[in-house]
Figure 1 (cartoon, rainbow over the protein chains, first blue to last red):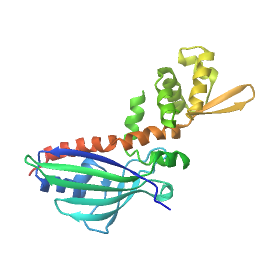
Figure 2 (cartoon, rainbow over the protein chains, first blue to last red; figure 1 turned 90 degrees about the vertical axis):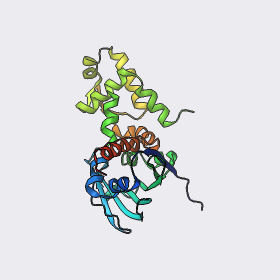
Figure 3 (tube, each protein chain N blue to C red; figure 1 turned 120 degrees about the horizontal axis):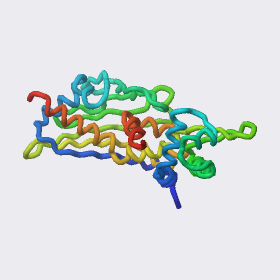
Length: 145
Length: 107
């Protein structure tokens, strides 16, 4: 049996800030909350934590996470999974941040890997697609009006 | 062949259909007649739009006597959410917020 192919989302941006400062924003819980979500994150490999957002229809608002890699100012990786009774058929991904110093600052790369192909999404029913939508749902729905 | 996402996107591209879907999301189950009262189009037109919405999985119909009651199936929006996730919309938005935070932070 071969593993089913998965997809990744990669977003990269060069920021005019020192890597150390970006690292703080990625790893200090109160800063992380300001731009991502409420959390009990700690930059310790093996630490299990949650990201929490307002629940939405078909998403309980909680992501189960576990720290996988902590290389200060360089790389940070954690599991980013659906939680509770949504865990079984739900999102099972890994988010990896990589910081590379540049002339004017730092290149910040985020890769979220492990998205299953759409075919499988369709086969398993639509629900777990909603677990991926995080805070975006409200905006999507607002955009439809 | 049209994929599920193609069907969904083309279905929601029509403003009257979107308005009908939004109304069902907001008000719950409604009959064709109730929908027609506010849609600004004829009852046959509303029925036709409901047929398209049903094909896309966006509405469910339930017959009760002479009337058919329609309800929204927001789960059918999932391919749209998948599409957004796969194209990084969520993370691009969060990068904007990260950048704004970095600009506010001291060194």
